[in-house]
Image (tube, rainbow, N blue to C red):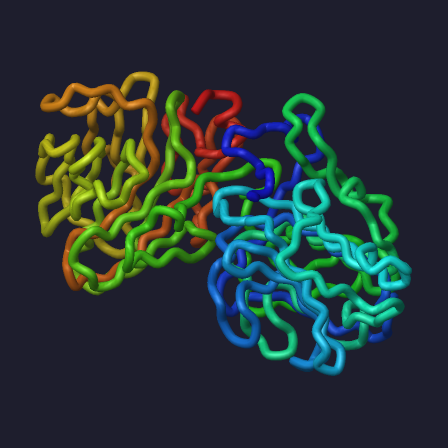
Length: 473
């Protein structure tokens, strides 16, 4: 069973409570603090919105840690994702209590709301730990060993409390986004303290957490202070940031979900990072491609891609749009074997615009580190305009009808990126409105969304759920 998610077209929170920012966590990045005095170790609640792809296993525990407490591998409390499932674990003197969900959390493009409510004073064991996803209690588990009655956990104790990493031996990092992280000390709350179902769409959405009782060691991370992303908005002691910069603040949130790249269809030798905005290609010679998480079928959309690093002077990145999520259908230059693509292929010192398998233009120029390619995708009129460092580069005028050879009609497109040169490695960072790199351009769309290098063409918008709901997609 897969949890209900914030869907790509969702705008349920529009006009209600808005979450302005999230934090983008990557390998080696986390927040932590150690309370000076113990709070309530038996009764507490943690609530957080997360977006990412929690599938890797590193260091002492499998998966990616959301929150952990404890100094020792034999005395700790933590919860984390591993291989698409969610797990809560407490170990006291090396005796484990583990609860593992059957429910899957595998959609890397969706925001999930997770609530863990603990009250070990309850006489019924199943009431001592309750786990909720998007407002609904999870009751199906592959493993369920509950806390002993009146057991003390290590949350709210005078030991390390970590967000985004294991606490006893730093590792098992969370790779993705977090928003609205709340810890309540002394209260076992239900999800309605943090969210509600939208009366029109039925989608679970956040509400203001003002007025909650945080207790001695509780905290509230809203991630709105770019210079202090560990700031406790409730007024308590801030969390210390490790390997976190101002650029790790994002506007991709549970009330406005931005497009990212998706690991679900990427080919071998394409590694994603920075909240699935960066792609790094290795040295394989064939079929390396990755796609966007949102398909647009109507409207006008703008995004940028920056070359971050390369092993060669000229970057042979194939950047464009595709109407297929089947990576095996994509050849080296994003020239389609199955389906239809439009791409800019800056091979050598020349550069070509491919529409399907047809080379429509040549001599568009090579790419180098720090170059930024913009794409203005007009699904209403069937055009795609490329830009290089703010200047118009080349355009395609028949993207919705296919090339002259096939004449087929395709319903929608997503961003596509591939590499054609065997032995070349490079990293490209995609900016759908909330860049993973420092961007001083400060150019937003007409609705105020996005931060782009170049001025957004009139009538074009960032690829995010609020814009999709208003302008079609």
